[in-house]
Image 1: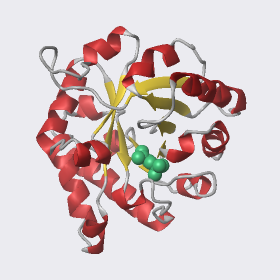
Image 2: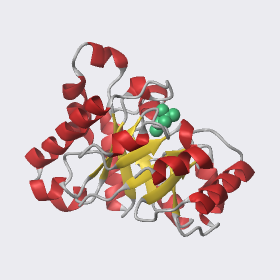
Image 3: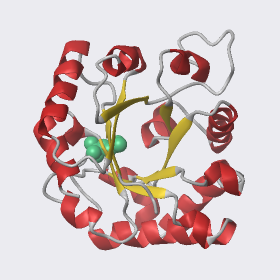
Length: 248
Ligand code: PGA
């Protein structure tokens, strides 16, 4: 069975003290612990936030560099992240693809670097509005997965996590309908079956992201192929984030 996950993506928001307050708030409001909870903090905060040693909240980074080490000013390597006890990161968020020109091949290199270093990741995919309007969303998302993720072996992809985040729904207040989310999640699971097997496909968690909030989370999480959420805006306050987690 795929793991249930609700992850918060803080993006470039919050100061350290605000982040500490948020995580303390989350821990005090959670009722259910069978959902895996992760907060993706700015890299600088990953260590101090993880040092809070909260029982329910894991910490990850929003980005890392695909190279081992060297002259990459301003970047952070997987080994540096791991050296502070943080073992998970996002790959391929649409904002990284769009603003930092992360191509299919760069994202593939990040996937390989993560696999090679025993570093867990959530692979993000999703189509922009013009692609959906042209009814090309399935081929677009399939290409993102084919180019950067589906070269992995059975053993490497087993138990992994993919986040489907339609770009037109991110930070816009415009959520995908449950039909739109389920249809794409089901397609993603079917592609995993085609590339790997039914058994592997059942172990991969497929999260939905894009204006997920306490009002729509329950309906989205009730879809058979939605295993959780990657939450941006609504992860920045403990009430909303916990209401989303507790809606499972
Ligand atoms: P949002 O962001 O929930 O604010 O739409 C989701 C994300 O970008 O991960």
